[in-house]
Structure formats: structure tokens, C-alpha cells
Image 1 (cartoon, protein in one colour):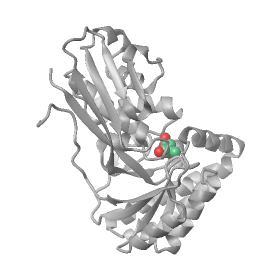
Image 2: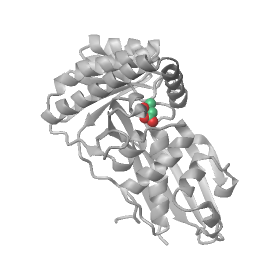
Image 3: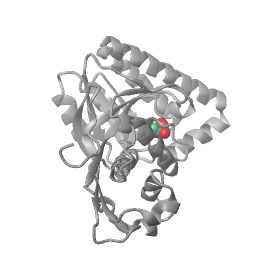
Length: 325
Ligand code: MEV
């Protein structure tokens, strides 16, 4: 039995977070420079059912059976093979590493689940399609976020920019004019679960107001998709700014994210918004060729780190397989 490796990228939400939980469309893109990587090595000396999991980044080294039933890594394995069959699993060691910062809005949990599900299913000789990986990772996302929309698991499983709406077939964005996004760490961790719950509380208290905010965000996503398909990238800037304002009204921005957004715009970015669940995490800013000034200003304004990501597609996904396949 050979070793199997799978990776999954980080992600940014370009438009539509939170509203997407309420059925509005949203746009997400993979961040290929960040990745979760899972290697499953057979353990020829072990007995059936002995599955060792090592995730150095979170200081975890444990046997699968020692993990709590609702531990996300155990849930990811259980999404591939039912718990009753754990005792018959071929002995193996699973190594999980990730360069995607945790609690950052960059999709770390979904990427780890997707890479683990893909590598482990391939190891068992049951290769899963992207759709199956996405569905299985969605089950794990429920543990992380309570009521996920499904956008995070979709973008990291398919590794392509997507236009996503619950209950509607997934649409892949073909990007004729690639564009550049600066991604800035606000320096404070985000909290998607808390943010999603806070938005839900607001919506329960004042459904009309929240419904109005959601539908405006949804129409921004729809307009952004049109602009992207026509290659009219300049139009995305004001749409990002407006989306950020609406996220502020939903209560998921922070003074630091607002300050970074303003700084980026004043430094020449075409638009800026928070990305992901919010309450911390990352800011994204659309930039043209003048990348250096907004990059430097964001760092001066207190961003913990800044990097550039090209939004283009579709991508070739790297998945499964013994070395060389
Ligand atoms: C998180 O990346 C995006 C949210 O809209 C939650 C979700 O869609 O599951 C905040």
C-alpha cells in the first residue's frame, strides 16, 4: 500500500459572506500560496484499526480512537468511512500540516478537512470526486461553524473561483482578466462561529433590516460576477467598498479592519473589504499595478502581514496518488 498525499488551498471570500448563509449568492476564490497538506503513510508494523494522527501545527499527536467523537479530524475520517469500521482500518500514520493561518477567515478548517478526506479516501482505494470531498467536508464544517453555507468547503474542494448560492448548482467563474488582491492580516484572530451567531441574533431581532442587508449584499455578488465575466475589474472596487459597509452594518467588522480598509483605499487600492467571518481575521484589497504603496501603508497601519494573491482560473487541482501519479 503506497503513501497518499493531498492538498487543499486557502480561500478568500471576494463578495457575499454572511448573506450566503441566508441563501444569497457569494463569490470565493482559492489562495494557492497557502495550503493544507495531508500525507497518509501505511504502517506495516501496526495492527488493523491503529490510525495515528499528527498535526504539529496544533500540537496534536493522537490515535484516531482517542479523539472525541465531535473532534473535526475524527469527523473528517468518519465522513469517509463509518465509525463501526474504524477497527478494521489499515494501520497508518496521518501527517497534517498547514500554512493557512487558523482563525483568519482564510479557510483553514475547510482546507484541512478537504485534504484529509481526499488523502484518506485515496489511501483506502476509494478515491472521491471533488463533489464528494466537498460534501464530506461540509459535514465537518457544521462542527466548526454551526450553520455553514457550504461555500468554504466548495471552493477548497474544487480549487477554483466560484459563484456559490445554496441550493443552486455550483458555478465556476472563468476569469478572462486575472486580477490582484492584497491580503492583510488585521493581527487579531477572527471568529466565524461567533460572527455567524451574532448575525443570526440580529436577524431574529430585526428580520426586515437584516433581510434588506442580505439582499443588497446578494445583488453586489451578482453584479461582481457580471463585471468579472466582462473583464471589467475596475468595477469591483466600489462593490467591495459597499460590501464592506454592509458587513459593518451586520456588526462583523472591527475598528482595525475598518482602519486597514480606509488605509488601503487612500493608498490607491481600488476597493477593500473584510473577508470571511470577520470580528478579526483578514482584509482584502483590490489593487492595480501600483501594489507597493498600499502594501507598505497597510503594514504601517498595523497589519501583521500582507501578501499578494492573483485571482485567476480555472486551476489544476493537485490531489491523491502515490508520488508521481
Ligand atoms: C465564512 O468563510 C463565510 C461565512 O459566510 C460563513 C459561511 O458561509 O459558512 C461567514
